[in-house]
Image (tube, rainbow, N blue to C red):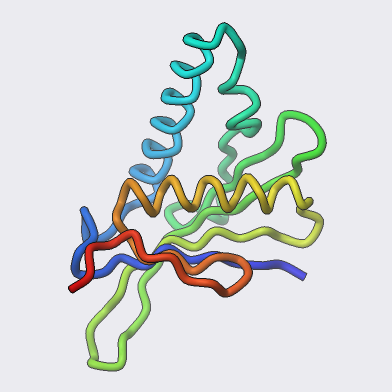
Length: 140
């Protein structure tokens, strides 16, 4: 059964929403940062930290893309963006991270790591795969 994690943009978030292209750029920045760490350690850390390639399908154009694993034990993770109505009649933007059927525990661990990186960078409210909530946004 598939599982989802959500990054909700709130009033204190660094940006009000992101597009798929911007989300790809944030993941690219993550890969760049891990490669710099790897160079300092003289190790190919970026391959271990981001063992995926970004893949797109025509049916997901503008809505979602997925990360396809380069090797075992990883398989794939799906990233999407959207909006939902709030109780007060407004809209709330979010990023959804999905572990489809067939994803492994390694994908779940890497999904948690990527979600925490994105939530920390974007200052969002993170709802993890297990239902727990982490607040990276400034709250009063």
